[in-house]
Image (cartoon, rainbow, N blue to C red; front, side, top):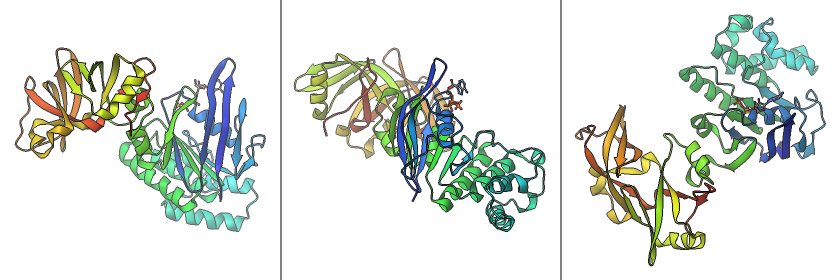
Length: 374
Ligand SMILES: Nc1ncnc2c1ncn2[C@@H]1O[C@H](COP(=O)(O)OP(=O)(O)OP(=O)(O)O)[C@@H](O)[C@H]1O
């Protein structure tokens, strides 16, 4: 059993605090993703776990042992960084072997492990090639093989796929998940690509400006974002946000805004009464908007109804993005399944429905999520 845990981790470079009070735990066999925009401190966290950067505060634990003061070569951590860290003057075989030689693994054992890894990652034909002659995808597989031959307690990946084209990226991602499944060790993976995070994470943390905003499974973060930032960061296309007034029309509360008059289900009454808010930010995911031609299949009482004028259209295979003006000024994006017998055009006015249980409300000042009573 291995487990990696960071407790109250902080890092300051000069006056700049780049990681602030970060804590998380990754269990054996778990794939944990640190997701966040560039410059948020994700790489610095991995560098602190691997021992390349000493924390200003906080501790790093592997297998319930505090290893914060251990030098990097003592820590049994397998790392694949963004630049892959391959030695350009060495061939593929020696790049993979190097870390094992440093650890005094016998030549025989090294040969055995490399053959195994080369078979799994299809590297056999290029074992004697120089790193300089390899494509981006091949280099990426060499870096993975280097992690695979190591019997590490923890694996760390820092955007290892960022230099690859989309098709290669998908293949490399599958190879990486394969390495993880073979090793069944805790893995921490850094990315700023939320679609990638969703595809591979068991659990993930959204990290911005050195702080974790939320930790949970991809579904938890999608369904129950703690704030407007997380709600818009997770899910493509981004959640629509509209500023609306709150009106108390006893016994219920209603949302009133540009083209909007929604009477909220009674579950919201307590939350809105307690908060005494007069305005909120209303969040609607583009795929939660139902077009009029799908109305017959739905129970109207479950939906808020309004209408919008199409201002832009973008058709893709199987779905169409439709930008709608509602009221005189507000604009929202809806994504509809493309229908053979429905012709849409700019300027057209259509009716839309929004499921009552699929709206999000945010406090306009703190931008934290508001939730109805269960
Ligand atoms: N050695 C250093 N000295 C000074 N500042 C640093 C150092 N390393 C990182 N930083 C700063 O710390 C901040 C966080 O950087 P970090 O690379 O950890 O973020 P990141 O979330 O991994 O970003 P990216 O996705 O772009 O790699 C950045 O502002 C960066 O400039």
